[in-house]
Length: 478
Image 1 (tube, rainbow, N blue to C red):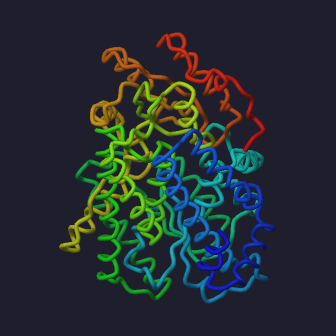
Image 2: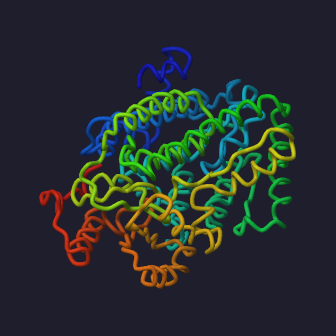
Image 3: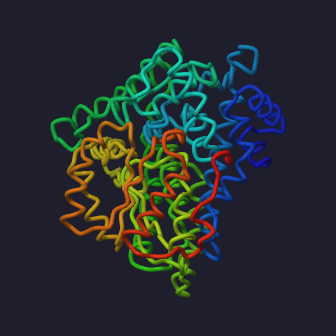
């Protein structure tokens, strides 16, 4: 990790900025000093190839996190006496939900850095206490408590002035839902600098909206050209899209192994987080390094027919928006009940190959790609998309659904009854897991475990593989 700080910062002096940022920002000290615990939770009970494959995914996420942290801190006016460095002038900030693929034509001229990914999104998974402070801060100024806690936490960072000032402009989006629009409005007020809002339609598959979506992307490119003096570079764009397509092809190879064999060397939490992370942050060398190691490992595991999760009783698919404060519940479910979470809904996002034969084809596919972002496509993109669950259950040979019930998501609450009807009609075992996205106070991790255990006892009539894991107290742990 220290070598990453020096590598991405360009010199050992980056350690000084890293230390300054750790002292300046609450989320930095609370979250990233506990990062080894993040590894530990995500790898619980893993042995052999699946331990190595999952660990490589975590290594990639940590390396990319350090890259973003170093880029922010080395340019941050707040820890450099208000000075606008040359790198500050070349950085562009964007929502974590604006995919890095949007900025490919300007790579090398402009450095794109997701603003909330490090202070908010990753913190939920590493330390479930960190974001609570920002949710409370958002509500303390009179904003309502009922919208999505994700949006609350993101603008709570601004209420408390706990975000780095590393770029002269900002690009925002309304993804995952229109609750994010409020976040963008508040960010615009607090930042008080040029901001480009790039909305995406709710019913994104309507052909009438595609031309509009493409114009929004081109408007973003024009915004970058005007404010940075950068020029659209088709060759650079194609280079990074082709690299992204390579990742896409390998992702499908991974899905094929996960769906059709017991030899898949990556657990559910590592696969889902890595997929979201590399899709949102965009093409980076670390992803290809990790994929190279994982590909060799996976081919060897399949060739030698090594069963990676031998205690599997049920193959589950996790559907809808996940509890960010408990992304590692599936390691517990496997060790306690033999529930193998084969795939997550978020793992299946950005399922779009991008053509590069013509500008028109590339723009069309890029708009489709960004509309298939996490939660946008299936959670709020129309009931026909959220009901793709049935085909994915069949594709991945799953006999059980872990149905996430995000209590403050108005979109998902609207289809709750429809899912209940379909589960009964199809005779599908589905465990409803209520949660509040990043806020563990609404439904605790212990409550989630109890809900799953109660279902396994009363409906499935099964006994735990390890009774000592059924009930334990972890409310104060990271």
